[in-house]
Length: 157
Image 1 (cartoon, helix red, strand yellow):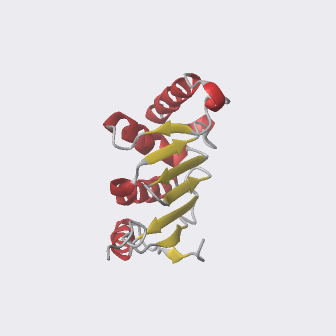
Image 2 (cartoon, helix red, strand yellow):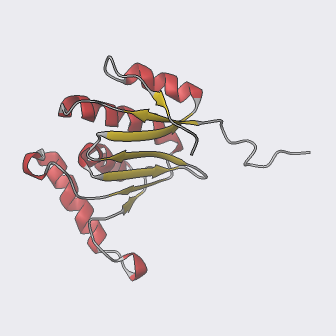
Image 3 (cartoon, one colour):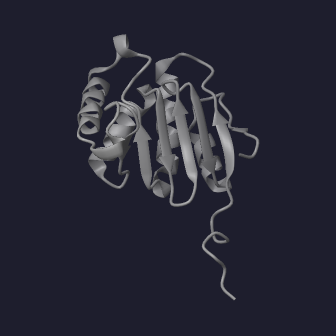
């Protein structure tokens, strides 16, 4: 008897990363750590090309925002809508992943998904982060977060 692919999925739990500070350097470090940890399982990314930091957006983040909106404007069919909302990226493509890393910490919403599961969301320009991790990934992420941040287990989703 063989196990179904669903039975072979890794056991994961939802965690919340709360930077608890408006210090952009700490928030960016948290976002980038989460992105690095989930990247191996990421199959799809959707990112909103809007930021709560319009007035203080670094030049590289501004360029990434412009690129995201340009890509969003090329959508056709039922996905056409607002060119800055839910721009889909392929995390296996280096240029796409660089857009996620550059703009993700400033976006109002970033969503990463694997083959069967949601992996992470970064909301409110990185001030609210939820991430679905294996025990090993959680340990790795905890070691990457700036002190004294800890991962908090979130109720099952």
